[in-house]
Image: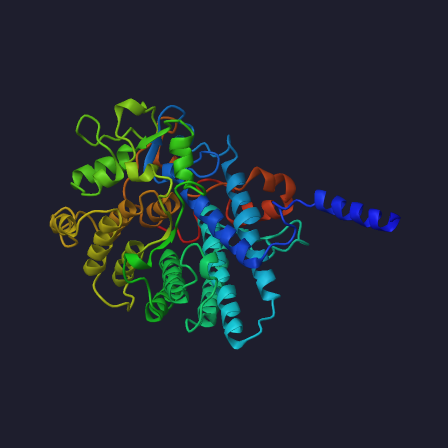
Length: 470
């Protein structure tokens, strides 16, 4: 009886001390799902402590507290928070998912293919995430970053990281086999559709190529041409979107704009004025009117919420998708590739027009409205103002609305459109072209930080990323 009683007590003790809501062992597939969720949230959020890229791209401006719109990146530790959400969240979950799935032993040939597909898809999101970090900071911890034994990881050269990311994309694409599946419903972007992930991988490779084209035209050309041969997005049906839900797991934009009860943002006059001048049919899809007109707050100045247009209703919805990569983005890359002399097929004007049309229809516009818009002399490729950088850069930037980092990167690469200067800075040259490194790196990884700062010519907001050579 004593033995039985002791065993029963032991069982109860273990039961009481087991946290069933936070398991100690998690399946790799679940960690992959969470990594997708964290990535979508990181890209979508407009929380000023985490993601101010919609301000950096001058899509939105602040109503009352205007420090972030004037590029105060330090007060809220924004670089630290960017580092943390990628390294400790997204990349860590992807790493653990990879290790757990790699350690599994499939019992069939089909299972082996599915396992290889899962590992390749994880790699594609690793590449996407590391590219974001490079595009934000330049040189970053990379080769030693995810090694738990490396408490002071070195910083790798940003151009060298891009080269390795291209190699990793190529390897992942070669491992994908669309004769079988992958994650199934655990994949919250494509539902485990390997064919879609192949298109995503090639489109990501094109993005890497075009981003680096001013710095390494030869490699950019061969990489872009190989991406086209592999198969890119061909319609909005291929868009990489994370499907947020209406009740739980809502878009952080909904949380920031609606649930918070705050009215912190209005559209910036930068984008509203440009779209007004072009009679852009996306205006009612992007903004509301105020007094019957589209009116943006003066960027970087106090802009009372009641006096200016607001963000369109669709953006306030809890299930507004997290936008990872889109078909319109790909067509603008192709337009650029043609202008650079790359053999990717088609004409720059055809890709440019297809990108505009895809954007308008993605946001719910009509094809007839897109055709009318493209036919305007101020928009038509043959007659629009400026060189190809200005034409493609401006229209790509408009299409990337709500995707702050990509819009900010497009402006840095193409030097268009012309941005506004806020109230707390004195010149255009004070607009940052990179984020400074986190303060935590200066204190916890000082030797590597110091070497990195020296290597890039100073840890300054005016120090360009390697691809920003114009």
